[in-house]
Image 1 (cartoon, rainbow, N blue to C red):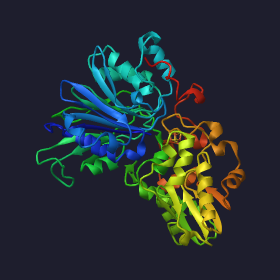
Image 2: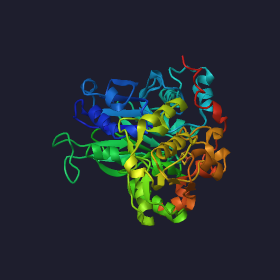
Image 3: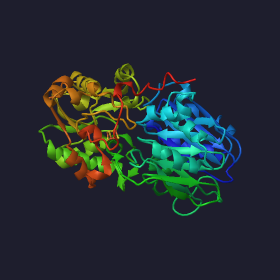
Image 4: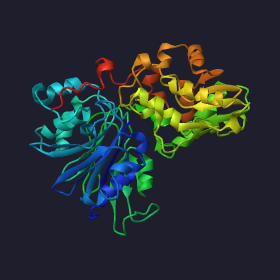
Length: 477
Ligand code: SF4
């Protein structure tokens, strides 16, 4: 996943970094391993980054020292490269031709090929991420400016990338031709329905992964950055659009099912409402007689509400989530995930004891977390546990920025429906179908990537999945 933000705030002193950090705070769910911000003031460009959560890394003591009217920010969830300080973003490259800092959401699929292009394969990288490689290619490209470098380099780059790029004079947003990951453009304004927060004469521009990040800083949504588009933001100017490739849209449908915040909007849909409709479709596809419907908090809640509404059964909360623990799915290792669920959820015995429960969740990846949740509910006295999943079974790995596990770790890839039900210990199990997802969204199939459900990868993936995450570990200088 990862969250990215770019801000241009003319005359704002140190506030571009403050606005970027505040917006990034609304994207914390997209990555919890590291955070960072890059700033520029028309001359110098600098970054500050560290391992940890946004609020820990970018606190109020740090922000005032990050001066400039241009800023980019990033929170990381690793898909290429391990969780070490060097791999935190934004990247920084003070190249012979230009200085660049980049925040990247997504994952490239021709990293090995690109590595060969970096000074004929003799280039050295200070970190082991595909973003570091891309930064080096762009900073070293002989071109008049950063936009020209992008137009030359990006046609050679394949995979998923929503980028925020900072050079000394501008912030640039880029979305790959498929638009796998979202990126939205907003306006920070001092008037109208969305007043700016930083004084009467403040007006600027913002790029962010989700509309919720615009809301938190009082910015208004202008539009999505289009797949295959470069959007250039410079102080005192209207945004400039450069198209470098034809759009072949394939937004990750999992963004709408689970990853993005429910208060965000994508493809014109509010995601809480989209998920509530998925729950309603799920109830139509997999009805079951029970006493109540409950979510696996927090992300299963909208679909559970929809399931209850469509089935006419009461909605209750039977699990309490420790709101200070991270999201289980995006922690990077299996052992961390296993520790995670024990501290994350507690059953409400009064709700679940002697009841037949319909438990709604948004995905089963490896099945281990689900098994622990069913176990918690049984231990608390549940009479029956009927599991309903508001997404189709995940049969295939993701190569485009979600570390869903390799194929043999995906329980749906190696087990039948009945075997999964038995493994997790549920009385029954039902998944929403792909047509059910589309009916809930009321949008056509060809707008989205559904590859982890149906194996139809919009961008071919050439190399062995098992070596991809740490493939650049050995080339770091
Ligand atoms: S493979 Fe799945 S998780 Fe990855 S981009 Fe496509 S829909 Fe999203």
